[in-house]
Amino acid sequence: MRLTSCVIPVVKSPKDYQTYRISPNDSNRLAIVFDTASANTSLTCCVEIFDVGGKTPPNRHQWAVEMFFVIKGEGVAMCDGKTVPIKTGDSLLVPPTGTHMIKNTGSSRLYTLTIMVPNEDFSELIRSGTPVELDEEDMLVLSRLVA
Image (cartoon, rainbow, N blue to C red; front, side, top):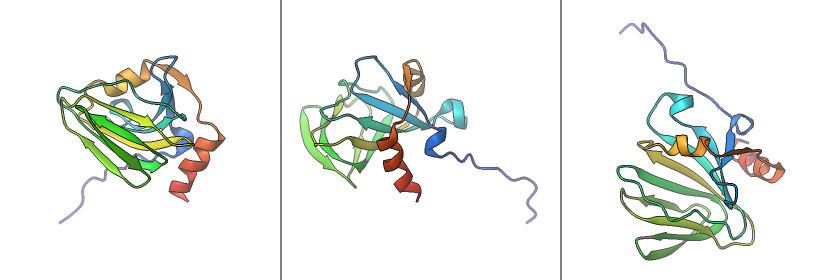
């Protein structure tokens, strides 16, 4: 079989991530890894960074499945009235229509790799927020992943 075309993958590193707070008083930030704008696909993949005591507002998605993989830290995940502890290495899958929230209960920042499929306007919501920078602690945590 003769290869007639080659798709070049999109490669990014933490210095390329665009980071936002959705609302000015939010205690979490989202660093976009890939989304509809950067990868031309209906998924959103970001690193979500929760300050100590930080949390997402309770939210739900009509069609999208959302997955969280805990990169570093500990917290609790709440979905439809159920609460479970989460820590480094844990994965959480939230089905469509599940009202959910993630909260950092640890003594340091909580980092999750957060993926939503399909996008369901998630990346547009993130990008409508306030741009912020990843700080030295964030870059240290994320650079350990690629070292």
